Image 1 (cartoon, rainbow, N blue to C red):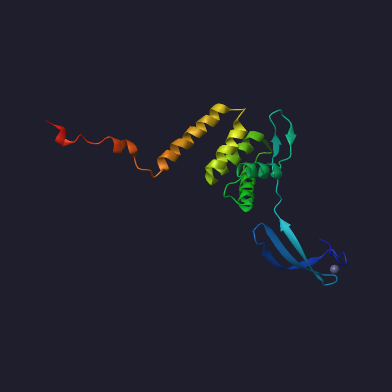
Image 2 (image 1 turned 45 degrees about the vertical axis):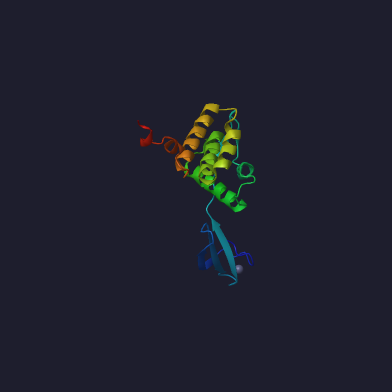
Length: 174
Ligand SMILES: [Zn+2]
């Protein structure tokens, strides 16, 4: 690495520390030619797989598209931009973790749904309904059924069916 002051090739690292988010290493270096100091940043190269669209065309993964989809789904929900950015990060990590060079665009949609499902059920249903409306209605209805079933199970409402079925009063018996 060339010194930015004198272009000398050799330098030594005098300090090395991890960035705030843990994904960047900051190195303080001293030039062996002019002895001036400079800083370098080292970052893990983020390689995201290519996205294969339904018609077979390939395009680069677009974080912007994912964030736009998430933002639309989370409209008027109590979800901050920071949370949306975090989710986009999580989606990217998951896509990178797959180790694939190419991914179907549907795989990204599924990942978005998985993350939204954990975050906010309204946002999830919104995204899922738009995303799946024309390609797979059955799958969407199945998801919805599961969702409704889970909600009714977790609802702390009193059990009405039990309240209605009163035991016959003993005074009525002749
Ligand atoms: Zn130098």
